Amino acid sequence: MSLEVLVENLKEAIRADGEKPLYGNVDLHKARELIKELGAYVLDVRPPEHVERENAEEVGIPGALYIPYPEFPKNLDRLPKPKNHPIVIGCKTGKLANRVAGFLEAMGYINVYVLDSDVENLIECHRAHTQG
Image (cartoon, rainbow, N blue to C red):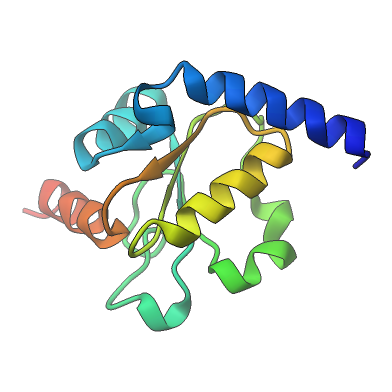
C-alpha cells in the first residue's frame, strides 16, 4: 500500500468517524443493534489469556470472528469484505480494539465501531438471548 493510499484511507476513516455518534464508540445496546439490523461483523481481538470461556466466534454470534490481537497480521485474509460493511471490535478494556480499529481504517475499512465495554458482556448478552 502506498503512502498516498494510506493517507486517503485515513482521511476517509476520520470523515466517516466524524459522522458517527461518539466517533464510533458503541455501547452494548448499539452493538447489538448494529449486529441485528445491519448484520455487523463482530471481531473479538482478545489475546487467548484474556478469554475466560468462549470467544465471540465460538459462542455463535452471527458474523463473529476471533482474531487475537497478537495474531492479527497473520489473519488479514479472514477480515470481512466489503470494506464498508459494519464491524464491531471488542476486547477486554477497549485498548486493543481501538488499535485494531485504527489498523482497519488505515486498510480502507470505513464502518468500524469499538465496543466500549468488555466483549464478554456482548457474549453473555448473546447467550441470554439464544438459550432457553
